[in-house]
Image (cartoon, rainbow over all chains, first blue to last red):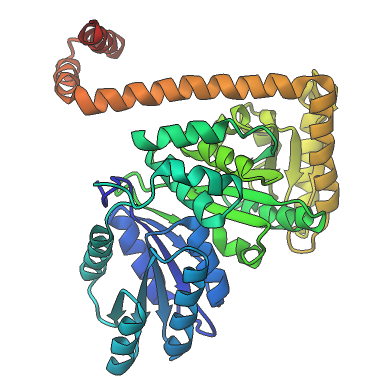
Length: 139
Length: 324
């Protein structure tokens, strides 16, 4: 049993922009799958427009964006705005990757639900996803 | 716990084609929850306009890439397309990785294309339990064509044929010899045969094998006057895609003019009725009869009761409890 609707939590995992490092996201995708979630993987080099629209069509609970290129302060505000415009504000946006602490604080202020930095253990990632869906409640 | 938006309030936005409403309604259909059934019933009343096309074939035959090409060709003709792309759930964790979108990214920002990934969640036969409700929703939302991409199938997962108007079976070179082609099962259900990856040098052999199979028997002529065509395509170069689209449209015309379309609609309705009954029963058993199920399983394990007899006992108990 997963989440308030008793069906699997849906997560979209995306790589945005000119960042070809996808080993991490593939491992995250696999560990979420093994925790019983439906994971939609978009592949590399996506744009914020593609990712936001895909997340709305897929009606995911969580949109996870992995960034190792330093573009977080450009990508996340754009994705949040696009989700808002397309009635997707109840999708929790989670960031993953490597970024400075001050960016983490600023992104959370903007509305990113969680940032999971490097060295986050798989079980902690799974727990974060479950907690975010629990806190949101049924929809 | 109450929902943020009651499902019935989503019906009107779905009919108007609002993406977020269509998406949420499909989630409700997947959940199978009782409080969504009224909304799904309302949506069902607005279906019947879309041409529903199933795309099936072995894993790696190029179904997702073909769907992408087909969507583009349909869009060039200003037709809107809904896609339900199905991938398997893990039999162990129940989770899944749905990767069909990776090959469809270029379509995403086109508002005339709606793509939804679905996990099988234990359903066999190549479809997910909510696939057909998903088709209803896309149909009611006004998409002209709805494509269902099945999971990669083996030789016998043919549920799709009971669910769509037109079935495409995709074969690809390098996956088996001519004996594979004359076996029964998936190959027999095609309304249109597609050989993908025809940019590969060994594709002509697959085309020849399939042509021989079709020439051998009843395979290529269906009772209502349709000759099953075989169309070589390449999703890399786009070769064969216009011919494929013409065949899909031609099939719908033949279905309509021969009256076969009504027959198929009836068959789809009947299959769904029986499937729904089956699902309702299974849910009720699992929710309210765990104890009896456990007891009967014990008796079977002890070698005393045959599965059929155990099922009869379970059904009898179920009936007697429901009598007024």
